[in-house]
Amino acid sequence: MKKSFIQFAILLFLAICAENVSAGIIWSADTHGSIGSGQITQLDGYSDGGWWYSYTDSSLGGNSTISIGNGSGEFSDSIDAHGSLQLTMKMGDTINGHAPFAGIGFPWISDDAGGVGPYDVSAVTGFFIKANNDRPIKVMLDWDTTTIGSARYYVQLPKGDFCRDMLFSTFKRTINDTLDPPITIVQALKVTTGIRFEWDGTAGDSASWTINAFTTAGSYSCDGLFLGAVNPSLSTLAPLITQSPSELRITGLSAPAQLTLRNLRGARVLAQPVNANSTVSLRGLPKGVYLVQVQGEGLQVRQRIMVQ
Image (cartoon, rainbow, N blue to C red; front, top):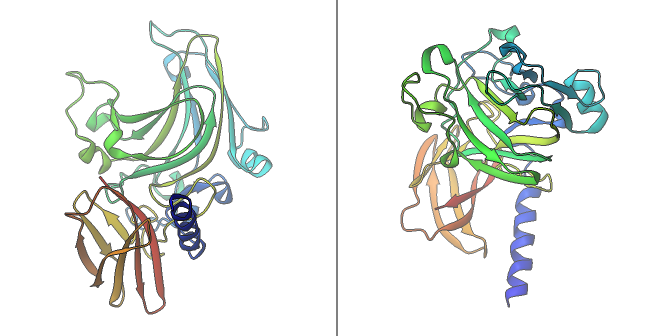
């Protein structure tokens, strides 16, 4: 019985994934060096996303280095050659008692379109990353430090292969002191200008890192299958189906549709009509993973959610 249930759950999962052709992609090898694949349409009115950049502690007088893929220094060349973003970082000397560091990042808006932002990413529950590294890496929310302070929110990823959602509820502040005004994770999500991936190392040490995909949480599987689609008229950071702890919000519908919620056994636990701006209560549901379907004329969107 247990074996047949697992087989059924896998088949249901794969069937749902096969029907989706787009999702909340922020970056994959298919988008080359750009962010959002040109699909970000509501970043302060701009239509194009940002681009990868690298940085080191040289701005503070350090001498750490970072090498991109095939040595050309161009992110696109590395991505096209390897089908992933491959990096090598070497730590320089300790800087005034502080550990050396190096990293990469991207802004939500390209410099060509006016630069910084910020952009509100609180509509989603977190990010998804598929990567491999031989050192722990910080994934940090970036923002304008002149107005908010430098204590960014981050999540620490362990070394090795990892493929997982990073829920914002697990992010914490890098530092807390009197120089930085207090800011909650909810506030931080509303003022992000981009994302940074940083390694704080030991002088003389080196690290290698490969990134395969970076998307919105719940939109991508580890074998490359998409779990949810977004309305192309909306930002890739604002899915058609968004979740809070107690409810789902459905936005962007041009005509009435039907929402169905199933557990991993395939049993229907909820069904109701939805329109352009609907909420669906999740109260009373057991904790676990559920599959949401919104279906209407010319529309079929499926997405995985987790009730905690």
